[in-house]
Image (cartoon, rainbow, N blue to C red; front, side):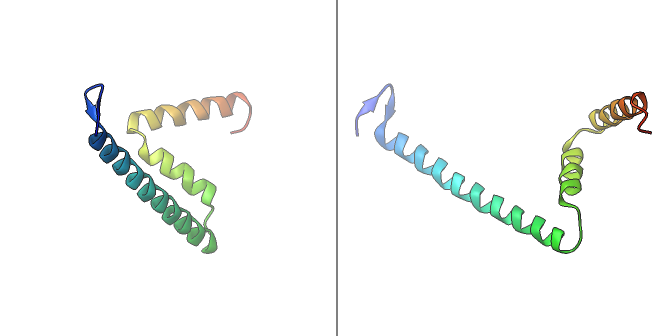
Amino acid sequence: MADVGGVTGDQLRSLIERIERLEEEKAALAEDIREVFAEAKGNGFDVKIMRQIIRLRKMETGDRQELEALLDTYKAALGML
């Protein structure tokens, strides 16, 4: 294949195909995650709260503590505590 801008057509095709395979895997994983959430919901768990917990668990401890402190401050200011 032709060499365009220092990249061969074969190399470009290979990269595109790898990305396409990874996109397919990502879609399959997303479907698996939806199924787990559906199972959780079927067992009586609140999926919205589970998503929040997952988001919080991804955060660094200090960042999470700062977020929770600010949330408590705002709630107190609004009379929600």
